[in-house]
Image: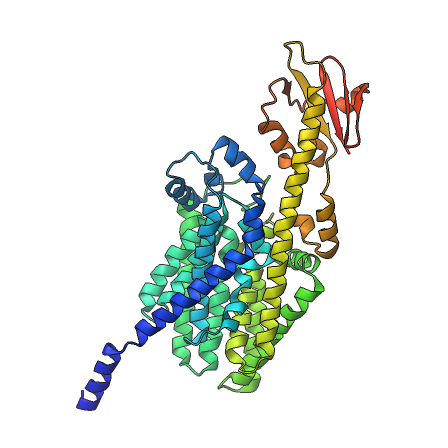
Length: 492
């Protein structure tokens, strides 16, 4: 090696640029923590026990092993310092904020080449504040592990430019970690691989290098999935979701997922999202250093592949999950495309579009959090009214009476108003107080398990509606029917 080359190599080794880059990323991470924390403020303030939270807070069980989410079980044991869980929120949700901020920082570093502005940060926010991931944040007990599933799929790309074997090992480990935390993130890694591969190709990296990256990524990802399937995953009953693979269901499942997106999202949200998708193709073509026709075709093909993989392995299942928390891959896809649009476009158009989209999601996060708070307050009022009126009946005997609930309380007035604007709230705000006829297990859990109702029991083996019980009490909110052994509470 000649002297000038040795001097250049020495300067690179002694350069402070890596430390400067680390300092910049620390600032980006801090800003993201602040923005995510603000976005989730209303949800945390609501202190709403979301679905499974109701049972975990009262019974203290973990329950993730039933779905082969063993990493969630292990991390919860460390976080709660015991296998017996208690409600430690908002610590869990704040931990989710840190994890999301780290995952977002990594995505920015992947595509921005170190030049990260405030608009880039705005562009990546849909990763965590899309309406679909907001349901994940609503879970007091599950939220950090759902966030960890995203980080598990993003973190391997830290090693992408360092060492290909190290990247492959991290990819295998990340895939297994994702599968044992929350499998809804299974589409994130392949989407990132496609986006990175197209970026490499468009800036005229060697084709051999691009194909090597794709091959190693695919092999590592499939190896991780195979390890999970063969050595970790336990059989799951079909009542919740089926883990049987059925290739004939791919297109119907994809159609169902995107019909849900269309029904859930406001047109005001879909327009900038479509603009970002169009921008990814157009800007990717214009900035490409290769043939424009080939660039356009490959950009369009990569977008189509990412859209197909957004919901991960769920599209291959005979009976997948279509609930909002299973669809947060769409928010991650939006973030990936938005960040690349901001990186490719030096003008302000796409930066403003991406910032506007994040503002829409930020505004909705407050609406959603406040809706949960209103629903909680309304539920407490209705439950207390029902128990108060039940308490006014004759309980002088020692016998335990059979009590059944019929109907449900619906939504608080403020929530009904919010649903007129945001259709997705119909899927995000759960039924909080209702009877067995609502066909949802959690609709009466709060009533039965939080108020020490020792003098009544739940019996689903009999339908009290068929007994024509006399009215004992009629109020604005419910009707109480009963006789000596049976009580039917009809909610209005």
